[in-house]
Length: 335
Image (cartoon, one colour):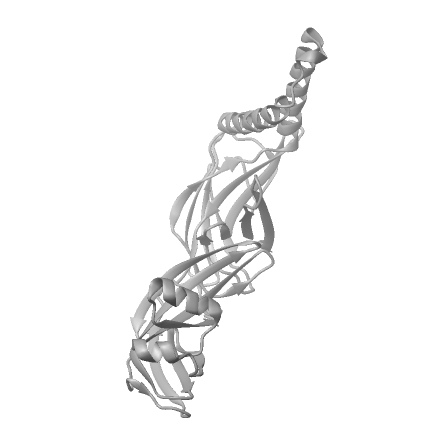
């Protein structure tokens, strides 16, 4: 028992567009009896120390024979097709996307018992009465020749917190807490005041940013495809009361991953591409701007787990001596 050696080789090759061919090679030192060969394809997102796997499809590989002939190359061929909206494989600084093909060999019980297995696999088999052997292969899916297309829709902008808002709120909170200690004495200081103060300050900064943005006016944009494949159209709607100076609009493609290790999460960002900036004319309520898509390979919008590729539009300008930045996420897909 446990003396038969089985070796395997799994190859995945692209045929065309979203279609792939697979070839499984099995070699054994003695005859083995198969019941079935099942396979699954997974899309994987890996970001720093976290990862996520989503099943894309599953299939049954046709059995050319139920008996694996000893000391012979036993071949099993199959084909599969990824969905049209599948994301291309990508290796970035903070995040990577890739595909995995998992093949499960389901053996007759006597054949499975005769296989040479590790102690761990023997333990799993004993506990679960499992008679399967798993083979895994990563493969690439390239979409570099695919054209990009914006998701035609209307998008709203929101104000990002700036240094002026943050410093003002932090200063006021520090002043209020200093007055509290002055009135009550240092004996009233407690260590839990620190985290409560940090959380409260963050919430007040977010609230102040929201209220200032609402006071300045709501900016909207409508995105649509252009006549050319390498560009898209942006119609910008700016309220007449909105009067920032030296205003510019541009977009970025951003690689982002959320690292959830420890008690708090950290967001890591990397700008993959930044477009040319265009002037925003405040005296015009509606203006049309044409943007070019990146002249390098970038992914469309992707979000899985804590990993994402974001397309984000920015408007910057000055008002009352302070610099303000508004942003809006928008969606891009492969056409």
